[in-house]
Length: 96
Image (tube, rainbow, N blue to C red; front, top):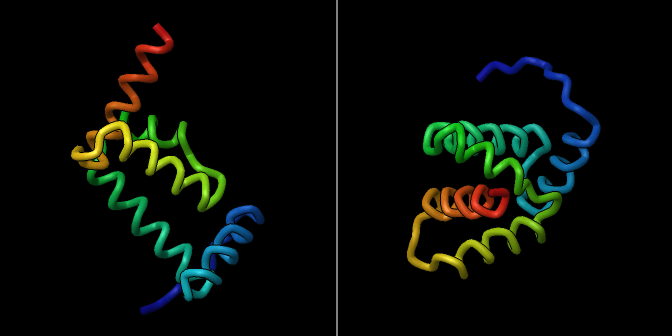
């Protein structure tokens, strides 16, 4: 597999380094992992669902765990996609 140098922000590099330590990956491997996840999310969710998810972007692993736990409690038998869609609907209703 060939590789190409890519510039990333200092904050992304720092976050990748921290995540790589607990996930037993290299920094490049962590960024590739996130890229694969992002591609999967984009393939599985609609643009509106992705925008809703981005509004809830967690700033740490603990925030992410709390975020997904809250979704599970709201809708324990729904898929992640259904849960995120419901969050979007709830958010839109709160603004109305």
